[in-house]
Image 1 (cartoon, helix red, strand yellow):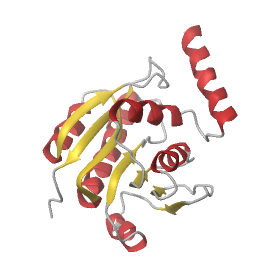
Image 2 (image 1 turned 60 degrees about the vertical axis):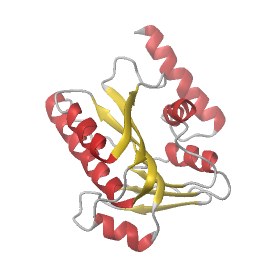
Image 3 (image 1 turned 180 degrees about the horizontal axis):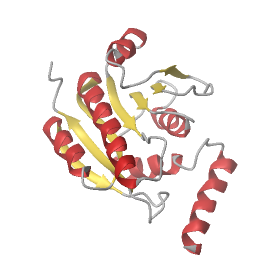
Image 4 (image 1 turned 120 degrees about the vertical axis):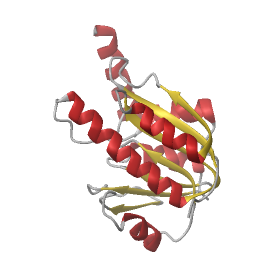
Length: 200
């Protein structure tokens, strides 16, 4: 437990020293370093982007000519050369609202979604999976053919639902548990590549 706390503090200090808004930035950096999902010039949508750590990484990786967009139910403090909008992704017209503000498709979609944790495990797990399935649905409408995605999920009895649905629309689906994640936490990431194409 002490080792895990030390690692968590290490990533928190790193984030502060390197100007990232959250230690979760290192989760995305590690996943991308292994799977090469984000490239220079990419258009990227970050679902559940607040406080903005993943937006910062996405902008760094996509470079000056990359386009990075974030949506979240909470407001996100401004990041240079990054666009954000406040949005509840569970609204029935959420996809239309994103398209209206950003009328293009994305190379990469990121989802580090987490509900407000109640401490009641089965409820938190079901809620997180439900949100992630919405993010997956949004991805199926807004990704370019051949695009990539990353989805956080809480491990549990419904985890397979996300992987199953992802496998229907991506050529390759694998999982990742970054070192920056608390090893005792239930979270891991579903890493998806080569989107098969819009189902509309």
